[in-house]
Amino acid sequence: MNEIARAGGPASGRLARLLGYLESDPGNLTLLSDAAEAALDERKPDIAVDLLGRYAAIAPLAPRETNLSGIAALQARQFDKAAEAFGALFEAGTDDSAIRFNLAWARANLKDFAAALEILDDETARHLPQAAELRVQLMHQFGDFDGAGDAARAYVELYPDHRGLMAAVSVLALDINDEALAARSAAIAGDHPDALTTLGTLALGDDHATDALDLFGRALSANRNAPRAWIGLGLAKMMTGQADSAPADLDKGAEMFGDHLGSWIAAGWAYFVNNDIASARARFETALGIDDTFAETHGSLAVLDILGGNLDEARRKSDVALRLDRHCYSAALAKSLLASSGGDQQTARRIFEIAANTPIAGSNRTIGQALAKMGMGLN
Image (cartoon, rainbow, N blue to C red; front, side, top):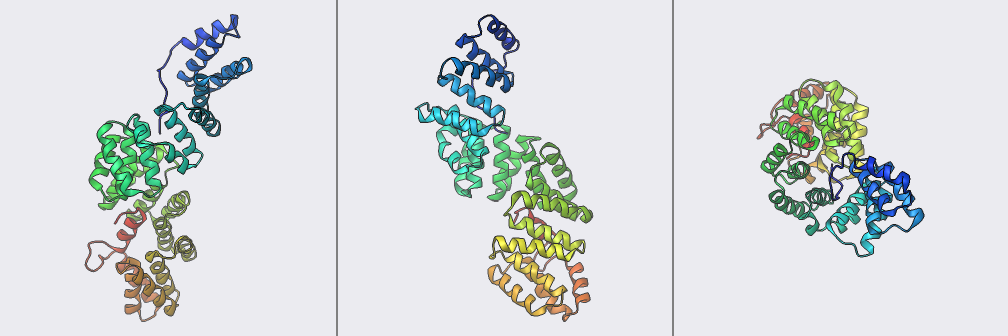
């Protein structure tokens, strides 16, 4: 989690002393301001808000007190109020790294990612490690993989021990296919949930599904709102004989991500393995609705059409899939089923069950492994 940027450290006992002074001098603006700062140092934003409200009833908040009100809002997770406070400071000409970061952090939590990235420039990231972490995350989210990769490699040299940054870099590194950077940064990040998810993803990619199961479980114990970890957990379950509980985990991850195609495809195959063909088709069609140019969606639907006896439609969809990607795993399976089953549904199902555990020609991966890798976004 990104840290709020502010000066000063814990002030044990200071708040109690200042509140005592205020009892005899309740209108002292300096005391009100200092007590609000002490409250924030002790992570008591409600007290800080009350004190700053008393200040504002006497005089308009000066820049220092406006900054304190923004920090109080961040601590209370009132991101709209935080963005208002820091935005007012920035527009008035107060431009330092802490203000820029806190404004970007508030905007990011309001899902205004473009505005957050606009304010969070490289100079700010080079002054604050938490700003570097957020900037990598925002660039990654916007799909600027080259730019994010270049920035990440620069920032890890500046802040080699910052766990949050290293965790964010580990996630990015998976998507830019730099497994060495992913492993190295995740190891430094330790038990950060994003780092555990990265290590789990790498373990799954190396077919160490039991290790992956443990890592994803630990990640979710720390953060239940981690879609990559839910997807990884479901895929690891599929690869360790726990397929009955995998669909629910994959659904959680896919729904959190929303538009990650591989997640919906993996969820569909998990339902298929559990003989819930209707739910499998629904997930594949969700993926189709998001992006009709993803080959594995057409190939997966083709397999279902074969098992349902709709061979003409299966041929059409598998041809579409192979035109989109000649290495499409599910389309290769569909073609194999069409060639080998002669249209018999029971024969097709038996062939599928064999194919799911038999290496694909020219590869060491089974269909199941290939789909697992796709679900995690691995090549």
